[in-house]
Every structure is written in structure tokens, then in C-alpha cells.
Image 1: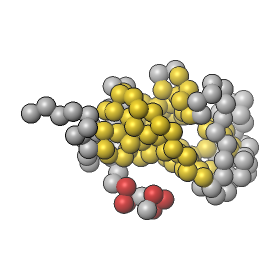
Image 2: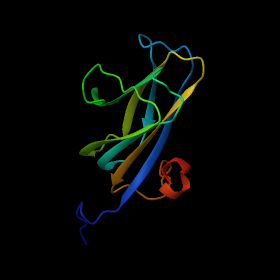
Image 3: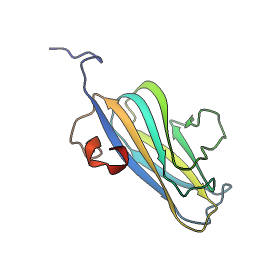
Image 4: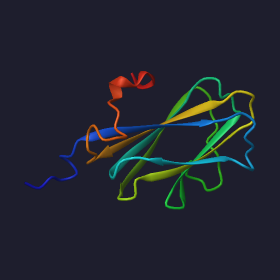
Length: 135
């Protein structure tokens, strides 16, 4: 039996990225986040209330900035959930994230990647109903 991309189930994979206070834009925190191999449909970024324009996020895949789409730009928001359509297959499951935080409190960004063909229950798969911020 052959599965097409239309018959593969879509599983969300979830990661968080916390940036400590006093992390300057010119020297952002960098981390590599592991997701699942498969067809990447959408990347949802949740920025909880409290960031208040004092934080910024960039997401890079294979040396190409994908969030925000404009190279060198930063995603700056507060109390927002933004979905970025990707529509690409990735055999390389890692994203590099950069963040700054000029505030006095640490702040966390939440990333949810919808992946078709991901193995449910894998180490980075989290059922969406278990994530309070997505309920």
C-alpha cells in the first residue's frame, strides 16, 4: 500500500523557546529545536501576553530565514498567535531560532509545527489537546 501526502495524518510537534532578560538584539540567544521529518504545512508561533514589544524572534531553516519571511526582520508581538504557511517537505528536522529580550523578565515563545507523515507519539509530538495554550 502506498500512502500519498493526502492520506498521511497531520501531527503537531511542539517546542518552546525561553529568552532571558537583558538579551540584546545585537547578541540574540540562539537555539536549535528538533521537530519531525515530513511535510511541513504550517508553523504557528504563540507569543503570550506580557512580551509587550520587548522581545523579538527569528526562525531559520537551512540558513534561510522563514519567520518572519523578510531576511533580517524580527517577529515582535504581544498576546498573539501567528500562523506561517510553509508547504514544504523537510528531511532536515531542525530549526534554528534566535531571540532577544530587552525586558527585565524572561519570556517564552511557543512554536507548533504541523507535520504530515510524522510518527505520532514521537519524542517531539504532543497531542494538541494536552497543550492548554492551543485548547
